[in-house]
Length: 418
Image 1: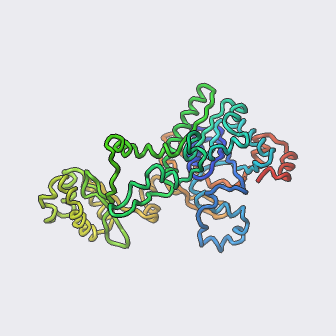
Image 2: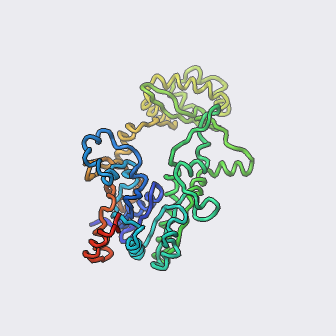
Image 3: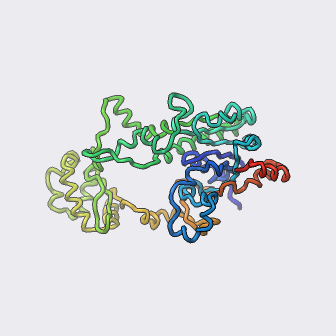
């Protein structure tokens, strides 16, 4: 019996760029939606340009890489953000006939996802008020850095900027140094969770009532939700988070500890007295574990610097994998501080089929992530190699929109397709 995916029959128009917008459209594509992605060669997606081509490929694909358009198919960031089945069309929206094709696609779609700065679409007569006249049941999902209202609405928002403004750049670091950014694009991976939920809710409403709506998602608001305890603490106590490195106010040992090997580390967390007894058993109940100052959680936290020295001395005699296995075997939270190589070889990720080999038209078989992060009991996520820029332009125009072949050829000559 052929598997049915929950979003089969749903038609999605993807006019997004960067990370957040594509990730949100991907949730629907993984599980059966037909997604048409609009792009432009003259203004290519930043992820098509981001990152360097693997040096091993430079010589092998030297001739292909001379073509600026084909070079856009080698962007590693684009591959990470688009491992799903999509149909690609390239449009030059400076051409009025391209705008008309855009509007035909809006009429075709159930869902339209876009991620441009406030006013970008309105300038071309493609805002929500314009589009709902074409398709009253359309769901338009708009995601940008700061939402489409307020004093910051007109400012472009990138992952680094939004992550900084949410406060994430201030929460990690050592007490005697400047804070350390946790990730360049952290909110790019948080915002789609809110956006995806909003989309699914709107789709359910549309299918029950036949009515569409506009979803305005502010990525900075999505990100701040993850820092709610810090906001609450400041609101109630006027207290800001003090940088503590890897330490914790209610656990010790708590940190990353050096192990055998080149730059190998293991994380260990001990929160309760029961866990401390198990930890002591693993390290051999050495003399320092019996000192009175370590007998309570308060004592261990207050003397955590000295405790960390003892722990580092012990972990330094073992590999990170050995420490993790011993600790977990006794119920103590512990994990290897993994490198990219560790992740690729991780047996759990292998069991989950996280990395999958997919044939790429230029690069041959390549490993792609399995990004949904969850599995459904009755439907599997469908992965696909990234769509090429404008790959299905003719098919979309002639087969989906019904444009006569002669008219399509005429449009090609007029520069309608970028």
